[in-house]
Length: 136
Length: 456
Image 1: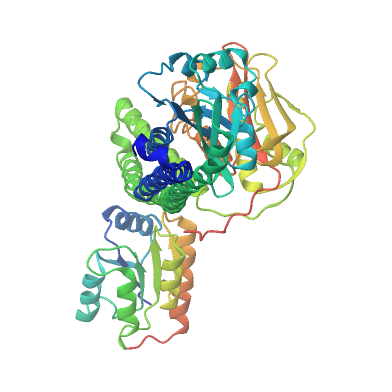
Image 2 (image 1 turned 180 degrees about the vertical axis):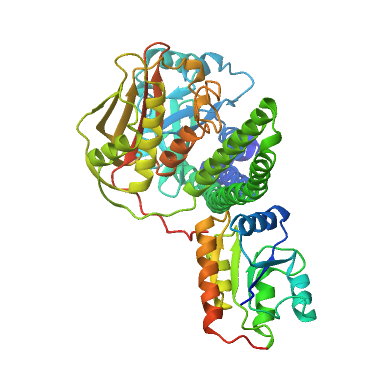
């Protein structure tokens, strides 16, 4: 199956970090990026991403629309509510973790990302898609 | 009154004389009463009553004592007839008289009744002579009472007084005493009222001051919390861009590897090294700010085991001898005590030197503020620290040696100070150049209960 990774993060270096990690892993995953929640929502709505089995990597602290706001939006959307989301953030605060898990996330990874945690989470998420029939 | 009429009927004449005397008495009492009613201050009333009494009764000399702390104190203003020179007498009657040195005053004080004494009763011969030379042979004392105590005594000196007249005088003097006593009472009441108001004011002032202090303490605590919060957030936010710099440097190093010159390779290595140092500083700052944020429960701690644990952790150097003296078992917040020992011991390890490098850890019971506790010491035999640096070493980010020589964030001792002082303990350094250094700190054995604060 053809998997896609949708990374939503406003930090260019962090985006680059994920890009290099996928590249170094010789991953076949396709990477899409957005730099805030609003742009990500627009891309999902336009069908630019999310039409194939996708995992969203989501930063929390972003301008315009924060990660939590974005999560609330897509969980309320019948079209996007089933996309698994992994939070990727520097925030270690209990509040953020609670807010994120309440919106049904598939994982919470603290930056700086260790390669192990990253790969492990991606594998779990990919296993999810192999058990689910992707809605078309 | 003419001599002619007086010769006509001796009895009538006597009655007239008596009436005349009583008229004068009435005038005196009326005068005294008016003065007494007009004033609420005793001292001016005393002076005026003395002069009125002397004038009315024809007594040449009079003055007043005030009772202060159980002693009679002569007031400065004397009344004396123009032809009477009282200077020697005034000099004799000292400004301060003990109660028993003036005969009669003692009695007057005890009875609080007007009293008459002949000059012959005066014990002091000098005073007796002085009075005799002025032709004065009688002494009258009029005590002035306020409530239950005598506050003043009027003293009059007069020539010989006939027995019959003495009987007349007694009620007059008693009335004067009562009238002036009312002034004294009013004065006392006024003073007590003022004192009451004053006490009330003081109390309100003290309450206000206590409230201010309370507010100040609260504000200070808030400020400290804000400062910790600031340090936490600041260092947290400093980390992200720094990590970016570190990533970028390592990517450049990797991607350009075939093209690097020895110089550019070294520069990139230095860049990464500096990033790591900055990371260490930020971590230390974070840790420092967390000391105030984390409430950790107390437990029973074997300090000996704790110290040996730290030694295991630090003991990468072979050429060092750890000497651990008997250490107590105490109830405390384990992690904080461990951190304190860790920082002091790693500091000692860094500085202990020579063939026989030694670090000694010891303890003795000590008072910590109002509670009991222990005084712990970590002593090394290193180069020692010049006393002029003893203050500076506790400050944040201070190291006394170049950074490339001793790796450390310069935060260890500041952290120790913050931990120890937060527990209510104190700490210090005993050291001379060339004689090693002993860092000591006190730790309450059973820490005071603190309200657990939310961990941010």
